[in-house]
Image (tube, rainbow, N blue to C red; front, side, top):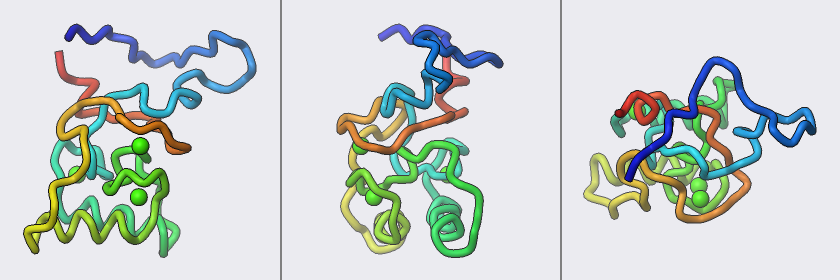
Length: 121
Ligand SMILES: [Ca+2]
Ligand SMILES: [Ca+2]
Ligand SMILES: [Ca+2]
């Protein structure tokens, strides 16, 4: 598969409704499931990012789809738990995409940016 390089400093608004197109296309950006911190790997920090966002006013994950570890279309405590279970207790693998793929299930969540995948050739 050839990925076009569509990322750039200026975001497009092709339909001119004042909302950036990339904000209106949930799942249109490749990401890795569970990697809420968008650093290219799934680790304990990803659970922490989600917990901080939910409970202590932390910054929103750069890619909500990636932070949605159980892919139920909502960011909740269960997403942090799912990552921790997988990491430490042999829990089920996270839903796809495992590495730089698109969200297979449409939902309300979007993905504003996921640097580890954008950097790939
Ligand atoms: Ca991470
Ligand atoms: Ca979820
Ligand atoms: Ca989804």
